[in-house]
Image 1 (cartoon, rainbow, N blue to C red):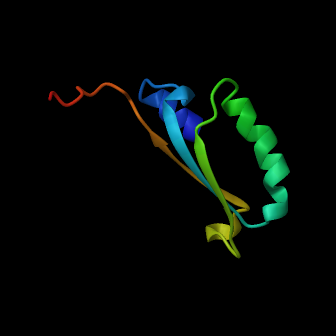
Image 2 (cartoon, rainbow, N blue to C red):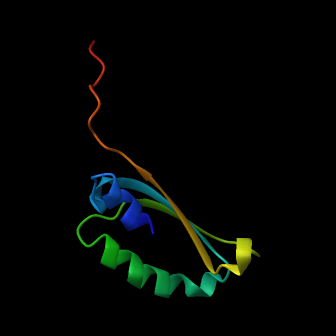
Length: 77
């Protein structure tokens, strides 16, 4: 879903700078890592992964991402 949202606003996955992942079963981390590298083949954004006791709607994984569009004007000194 994140990839579809990012692309729907004219950006690419490389614009993601930070990802937070919550896992209902931390033992699933190897499987998550395998999928994660497919979505970020050349650049891995910063990431936090935590194990949780429960996620909404019985989900096994929940992911949110922070994206930078790098289109702002830097401050002038």
